[in-house]
Length: 499
Image 1 (tube, helix red, strand yellow):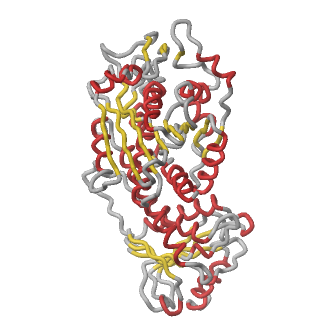
Image 2 (cartoon, rainbow, N blue to C red):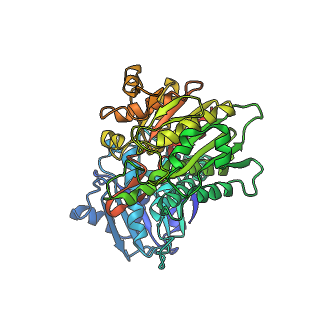
Image 3 (cartoon, rainbow, N blue to C red):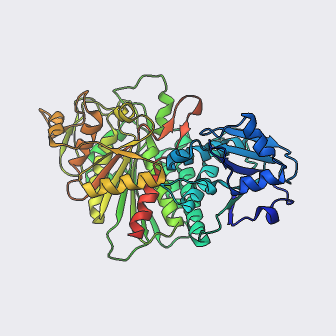
């Protein structure tokens, strides 16, 4: 899909020139924007008559597709409702643009001219709005049909985005390229997440990570095998892998866009390519969705994909501990005690709390990169899905400025997080009679005690934990990976680059 930006003069550019579709925004006041007003005039008041009839009221996310409107060369006109003018904010704008492109992809239009940045959102800039058009067009155009014999080809090939008269085209161009890079990263993550466990194995993840370094001197990829991890003493990660025939991997991706001595941002992504729960077996219903348990790893690879494409002037390290979690004769058992890379011992009371076991060794491994900050991303707890639903990822951190920065990045990308406490009192729930720490903390405060566990391995640097269990994938009829939080992570990296 190609994107172009232009200050469009409707009367010169499009009144007579054929187009697959005009996409026009309307609010509940039924006041037409500049271009919508021009289209209305060219069509002899056709748009105005529809508004007067009550067939289209401009309500939030309301969509009306018109065909063969007389007086213009466009095959279609798509009216998009943005609700009340004084209530149109960034979140509503993005959600409405997503609805518009969902409708547009159902048509046969091969190109469109989008005039939505004319809509006023007091908390956002026009060039931010244009970036949302790019991201929404690509997001709704994604198809998870890679392994299907019949492909659902995308018809929409070109999107022309109008920019208002008084705006700097350079800013729009920069934001358009950000949107394309983020969309590429999100798609990269969604493709990985949607693949079944028999395809997306730890070895496959490692191979896909290596593609990030192809023909790029700024990127290097290293993969540690079982023997390497044994020599290092990664007892927790290898304990999880014991029940599987697939070899575990520890994947590191180094991107050097900053100075030689600049400390890197380290992203650590949970890469459980299939999670049966191990000996603490999960219920059979919806167990197929446990292929999404590597979405933390996918988001790290997606964010690096975007950062490299944007040539961000910072150093970034991605670390992906990857394995399956399966039952078997050699699988780790409840009550087993393992020694982590840090030297701390862990009593494994539940083998289905395996994500924190592979992450704790990865967080210790991260220290060798002398990080500026470390963020781990994981589908860690069902408790987070219950607490925050599918709208926000959980955020816990040992450094308050990171919380503020991640909240800001989430607001900017509309890929939001919400902070939870990381208080000392919760650590008591992780006490063990036989080891330094237990891997679960009981029924209450599951999101927090999981993060408390990880914090034991992250006390040498500034660290944040993102629990994405509720946001990483959809269930039901819309089942599939969302690509979150690639947009959040990329926005965070963009913000750090700017700073």
